[in-house]
Image (cartoon, rainbow, N blue to C red):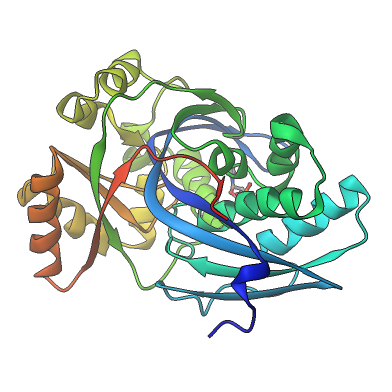
Amino acid sequence: MSTIRHTDAVHVRAPGKINVYLGVGPRHDDGYHALATVFQAVSLYEDVYATPADGFSLEVAGSVDVSDVPLDDRNLALRAAKLLARTAGIDEGVHLDIRKGVPVAGGMGGGSADAAATLVACDALWGTGLGPRGLHELAARLGADVPFALHGGTAVGTGRGDELTPALARGRFDWVLVLSEQGLSTPEIYARLDELRTHGDALADDATSLLEVPVALLQALRAGDAAELAPVMLNDLEAAAVLDRPDLEATLAHGVRRGALTGIVSGSGPTIAFLCAGPEAARTVQEELRATGREALHVHGPVPGAQILS
Ligand code: C5P
C-alpha cells in the first residue's frame, strides 16, 4: 500500500510503446546503434505521483511484477527527478510513487515512461517551466526511448531512436500483447544481434532491414489499415530475442494461427505484440492465447504521451 496521500501529488500518466518497425544499423563508439524505428504508444500506462519532499525517494507498485525494479539511482525515474533538479537549480526534493502497468524489462519502454512522467510531474511541481524543448533534451539524456514516452502517438525515431518525427496514423490499431514472467536485458539483446551479424548468421541476415522506414508502412499507418501494415512490420532484434527465448517462436506462430494478422517481438522483447483486424478479432485472439495459459492483454494505439491528470 502507498504511504503517501495522493491529494498533495501531481499525477502524470505515460504510455508504454510498441516498435511497429525497428531497423537496427551499425553500433557506434558510444555503444548505441543507429536506428530507423516507428513507435506507437499503446493503452498500457505508468502512473507517477510526485509529492514535495526534503530528499529524493521512491516506491513502486503495480499490476505487473515489480520485484526486479531497482529503487536506488539505477532507477530511471529517480535519475530523471535529480537531473531536472540539477539542471533547473532546484534544491527541493520529491517523493515518487510509481504504479506500473507496463511489463518490467518487457521491451515496451516502461522505465522510459516512468522517466518521462517524472520529468513532466517535477516540472509542474517545481514550476521549472522548461517547456517541451527543454524536457525533450533532458529526456534524450536519460535514454533513447524517453523522448517518445513524452510525445506519444505514432512517431518515426532516427539517430538512437530519440530524434522524433510525428507520423500520421488514422483511427485505432488493436494489439494483443503476450507477457513473459522473465524479462530480457536490452543491452544483451543488442549485443547478441551484433554477434549474429559478425558471424554472418542467416537468422539475423534474413530479417536485416534497410536503415529506412518503408514508405508502405507509413502509408498503412496513414490509412489506418491494419491489413496493409501487418506484412511490412519488422524487428531486427527479433532474431536475437528468439535465440535467448526459443519459446517465443511457438507463441508467435500460435497467435497468427488463431487469427492475428501478424506478430512481432516488441523492442528487445520478450513481450510479443499481435496486430489484429479490429477489437472483435483482438478479443478472440486474446481468449485463444489465454486458453493456452499465456498472459495476454488487449490494448490499442495510438494514445497520447505523458499527461498531467491532476
Ligand atoms: O537508452 P537506453 O538506456 O534505453 O538504452 C539501453 C541500451 O540499449 C543501451 O545501453 C544500448 O546497449 C542499447 N541501445 C542501442 N542502440 C540504441 C538504443 C539502445 O544499442 N539506439
